[in-house]
Image (cartoon, rainbow over all chains, first blue to last red; front, side, top):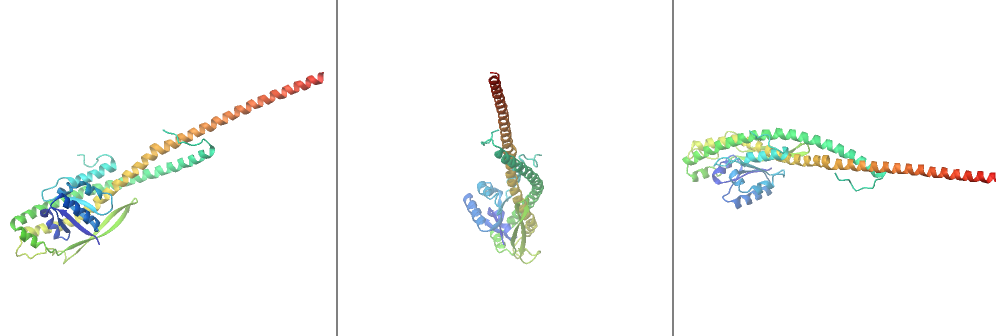
Length: 105
Length: 225
């Protein structure tokens, strides 16, 4: 059985506890990076990370991009969406097709 | 294009022809694979985009509700209310094979006291906004997991498509032209040898005829004497 983890600033992630995710509030860049590594090694299949922190540790997020698990999914934090999640979808499209054919409106 | 470094012999020619046939076949198969992958990928990525929009909207809604709840409750209170969750989410993961790419399939099960009762706190000390936030979040839950599944699939497929495209291009623009050029070179070389051989034989024949004629002349001359 795999678990679902959430990493982010306390205010954004606290609510996820109520629905049954494992919540790990972090406050600094280093802490987020370490926590992410720890969760990835400990059988978490999905790790949600708030965009604010995902923006700080792009190389850690990128590292797991091509392994099957864990899936690291950026979600908007309480300060609003930074568009990082969408841009990662966009990146996949650009990589596969060679040009952005979905978001060019 | 660079010619391969081989001896221009008939055996090498046969081998190269066989390799060219295999390369052409591989090229065709890979191209088909790439096209099919692309089709699957575009389906997934479109859904991925839609799902992400939904999740982002839902979560922003959840956050704004939470902010309201936090404004109405002290943060200690809030934290205390959420300290012991009633519900536990666990995932069953399996993989699905899309064109030999293993993509994850997530099935989640919630262990807890039932659908309607997800609130891990008594209602006495908490505000109604918190209930709304939790409710909204639990509605967003399936979408979030679906998003995780789709996004990972899209990333893995994108990677595979890139690899396949590289292979197709390597075959199309390097290996196959090289083989063709080498085969042409060997055929020309062999033909050239053939022609060389032919002229040599004709020359030898001429020389032999000349010799025979000389001999006959000599013999005739001897007879006349």
